[in-house]
Length: 302
View 1: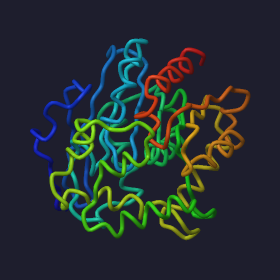
View 2: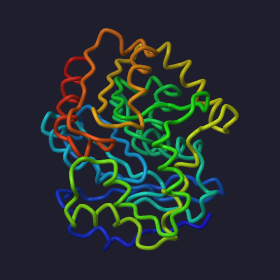
View 3: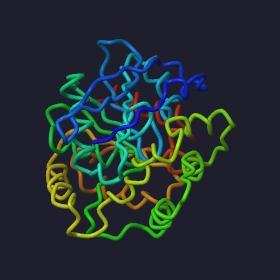
View 4: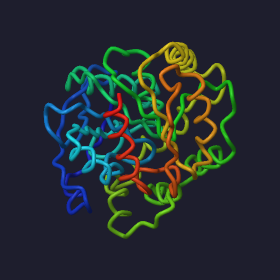
């Protein structure tokens, strides 16, 4: 597997993101290794909170949530998915699969960091991957926060707004990553924030990950990931792990999944599920401190 590595100087002077990167190797499918990056804060013995980002962002997305989580005594841990952020970037779209991304996150979280008693915060692909891990490794998790995410199986069509996004990514000769993130936010980016979202991708050859992810969302019942996702739904439908839905009030892509998760997961029953107001798809960017406060309250209440 040909993997690219973004030069570290691309990440100089990131706004509100002083966290030094940490690195570990995970196995690639060809017998080699890929380097994954993560950042963390808070007390080393604090309850761990796994912050999983989605497409096409990276751990920078969580910069306004991390201080509130750490100040509450939690240990926020934000990896960069393979193909994103400071993590290595397989050079071909075909190098990416749903199963591989699940395994890469699993390897970092469990084999490298040996995280237990975890609180998952998953948004976008962070939920598509994180919910699989919760279903397949429930002993590792103490609670779950689903934020603008879901677990598609291809049995129900994706909304038209998502199909427009997928077609835009497929057809773009030059993929403007920062513009894609901005399009999912209500706040307007400063030039510095825009540059931070572009930082992982110094050239088009680095963007196989962002180009691949929309193609990996199951959109038909015979998708390669459908069977595993159906099995995950079965496990989640029996799970008593405390489960919180914290969706925004302005995301047409995932809004329909909010009531589905609340009905389907026993751990969600009887809870007040907050709506994060004034936020779009990337609610961490639009309302990070508000979402962090909900996570802290959830941890303390469970």
